[in-house]
Length: 223
Image (cartoon, rainbow, N blue to C red):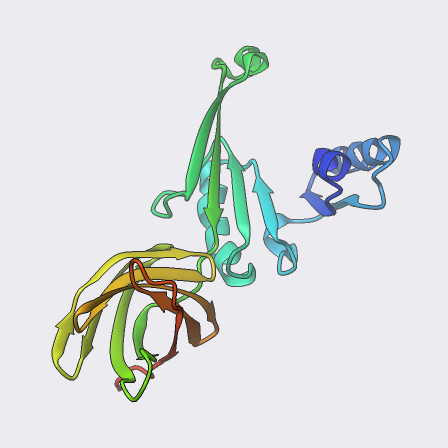
């Protein structure tokens, strides 16, 4: 947090249950001239308010990573980033990971390898959506979009009055969604933003720069 404040002008709050480490960190922040942007408090991490965070950094053991996952998904806004050092959350595959050679770790850990994992908190999109595409004229297309979801991993199906339609390369990244869908004789690339139970964006066909608006509303589940 101190490095982020010093190098990138970021603001952050550090949470630890060790009083001495909190005091040490606050003294260091003051010594580095970033105490107005980098603060440290003594608190249980499970009780910390993380709702305003855009990035959460973690260096905790795997058992705690698993216990923190529900809190991260419930309190962080879609698009927020979670970055962990060395330990990951099983089942929630990281959006990106890196391995680094860190010689000074070897004496303490027996290895000179450090691992970094990045997760981007996804919007909740699972369920059925009523989608409208405006190709122009009086040719408005009504499509039912069905999405299955496990964290940021999604697969999707679509159908209209004429039957099932094939969706390819569905991708969810935070509050952004994209997929390819053929409507009639035209193949479209859809991109859009998710906000609560609404999706909205544009679709384009290869070789054509005309952006066609589309929108979708989530349908209530059948009782």
